[in-house]
Length: 333
Image (cartoon, rainbow, N blue to C red; front, top):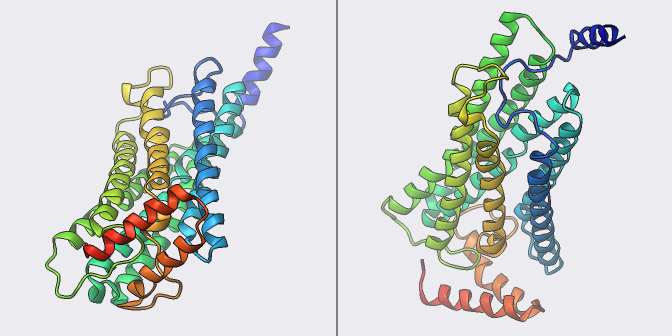
C-alpha cells in the first residue's frame, strides 16, 4: 500500500507544474518559522495600507488630490496578498501552483514603489530646474520608463511561470535569461531616482527654483534619496544573487536564506512605506492639478497650503503644516 501511494505521488509530481529543483530566495516556507514572521509583516502592511488610504481620503475630501498615496495603498494591498499566499504555501508546501503565485507576487509587487519614486524624482527635478524639467523629452523619458516597467513585468511573470511548466533544458535556459533580465531592470529602475535627484541638486541653476507642496526641496530630496537607496539595495541584492550559479534546493547558499529574504525584501519595503507616511509626502510632494509647465507648481503651493490649514481639523497636523509653510516663505529651498 505504501509503495502504491509513493508511486502515485511520484507520478503526480511528474506532471506540470513541476516543483523547483534549485534553491529559491527564502526557500520553501515552513509553518513553524515563516508563518509567524510573515504574519508580522502582514500586520505591518495592513497598518501601511490604512495610513496611506487615510491620507488619500482625507486629503481628497479637502480638494487636495495626491494619487501617490493611493498607489502606495495599492502596493501595501499587493504585499498583503503576497503574505497571505506565502502563509498558504507554508501550510501546503507541495502545492506548486501556490508556490508559483507566491514567487510572482514577491517579484511583481515592488514595481509600484519604483514608479512612485520616478514620479517624485521628476517633481524634484522640476522644482530645482523648472525650464529643463518641463522639457518634452523629460516627460517622454518618464513615459518610456513606465512602459519599460510594464513590459519587463510581463516578461518576468511569463518566464517565471513557464519555468515551472517545462523540463526542456533550452527552454529553462531562456526562462532564466529572461528572469535575469527582469531582475536587472528592477535594479536599474530603482537606481534611476538617485542620480536624477543628485543631478538636480548639484547642477548649476539658471532660473529660480520653484517651490511646491510644503517643506524645503532639500528635505524632499533627502526623503526620496533614502527611499530610493533602500529599494535599490533590495533590488540590487536580488539581481546580484540571481546571477550566481543555481544551487540544488537541498543545499541553498547563505544569500538564499530566510533572513536575507525578509531583510532585503519585506523589511526594506515596509521601511519605505513608513518613511513616506511619517514624512508626509502627501504634503511635501503635492502639486496643483493640471500642471503643464514652468510656474504651475508654485501657483498653487501657498494657496493650497492655506486652504489645507483652513479646513484641517487635526490640531497637531495643522501646527506642523503651518510651521512648514512659514519656513517655506522665509527660505526658498
